Amino acid sequence: MQSPCAFEVQLPRRELAPTPAIKQRLEQSGSRRTITMDDINTKLSKAAKNRELALAKQISDVKENLDKIGLVRERRNSEERMTASRISDRIAAAEEKRQVQISSIQDHARHHNQRVSTRVAIHTTELTEEALAKQKLI
Image 1 (tube, rainbow, N blue to C red):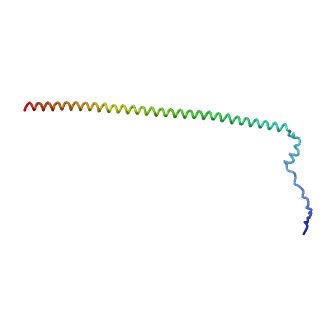
Image 2: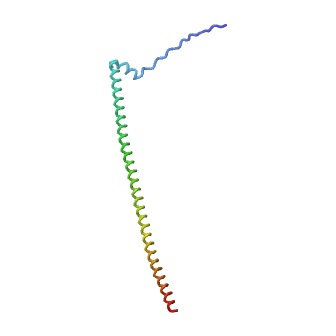
Image 3: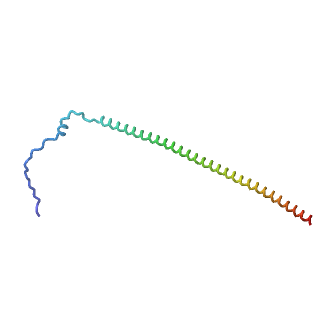
């Protein structure tokens, strides 16, 4: 069995590239204030307030939309009721008109029947009178 072997190779060192400008600025800006736990807590509480405000705004928007939806529903219901009342009014007017037409036709038929019956009565009386006159002549 063979044992593992290792080689050490010396590589020539290249000169490193100059540090980038960002790294230099970050290293030079050591005068920045360090972040403390109070700063973090302040930012967290501010973010929580902003979330609460956003949630309250969303809730108020939803309530406003619900009010608008209620108004639209009420308007639609009133329009449907008005349409139904118009239809029922039209139906009632049509029924009344129909009854007037029927009564007019009945009156006309009654008047015609009376005229016909009087003419028939007159004609039958004339015929009977003629028959009687013929019998008297014979």
